[in-house]
Length: 467
Image 1 (cartoon, helix red, strand yellow):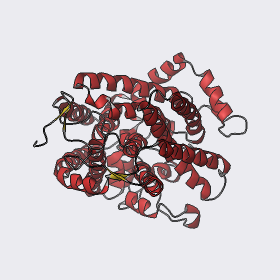
Image 2 (cartoon, one colour; image 1 turned 135 degrees about the horizontal axis):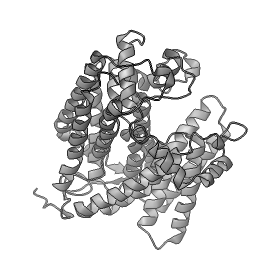
Image 3 (tube, one colour; image 1 turned 90 degrees about the vertical axis):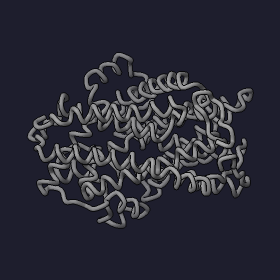
Image 4 (cartoon, rainbow, N blue to C red; image 1 turned 180 degrees about the horizontal axis):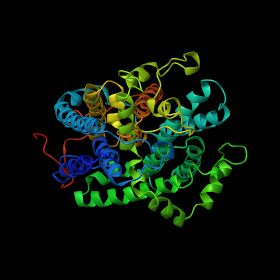
């Protein structure tokens, strides 16, 4: 694209900085390998780093948008916004370390004790929510409520059943329960959710459980090897689903997704088809035009074709419980509206406009900096809680449910990703409160106010208490 020269060094710098931010703390034994912080940096590498390279070398395939070429001003805004976002993220990450530890030590250490009864409760909730979703699809408000509950309940059920078996491997009925539930819920999420994020949560659930229960105590070399294998498995599953998730075969003659149509599409998918799908659009597969869309959004805002809506993401979150059918003017995501209302395209899609594109729409550089700060608050809360209580199934399930949305945060839509992340925390609190009422409370404490003292990840041994 025209004037995109500065994006190449920006993209390469983002890839290098985020890669080092992942590797160095793990090698030095200062961090776990599987954290929100690291997942967030994978997001930056994918949607900012590779996205910038895609703008320079890739093709923009929208025939209706071939008129668009970014101005020097558009590119300058994207570059400055990205740099400010990175400065905000790194500064906040280190300044918030101590305050967030105090919050997690006080508020995230009371949970129900692990038990078979608690696991079966999670299974029951998942079955009720998924069956309820299928039965209430066309019912106002209730259908959407059940759908949201089913998405989180499915992930929690997978985590709880796998963890219970993994810590009681001789109990084969638990293994069969997990396998049956895994197959059913994997099909369910493909029927009810076109996106890849939910199926990724289902697939990575067992891998995340194994990491926090066992793998994290291995050497960095072993951990990195395991992460590479897990990453390849996750990539393969995402590519497998991507190759047919929009296929007309999955919709059937009635135009509705069903278990039978999904199974048929799965059977018809071949390895060669997956390879062809990826090789035909390798750059786009990763970055998904994120920086193209950021530049386009900035361009339309600068041309006054899109009105600035200050802190639209926070306004959406504040009004989220109110049904749109009762409030036509309720805040909505720009990612869908820009396609239909602004550009008047016929496609039914929702674009990720990138963190800078969304931030520029919601107030400019100050909002981009502020959203970097808020994201770090969430990252710090989750990572510190997991370090304190690595075997807590509620926290592991929350981690699994929110991780794909953390991964997609810098892509956007920020409204969607923020909502999904907060819903994962809210669901954990809801079922945790229910579990405490039914089964009692197990306060989790340790030498550092958590479940275990600081860990030297290079040796797998805990530091002495005085350290």
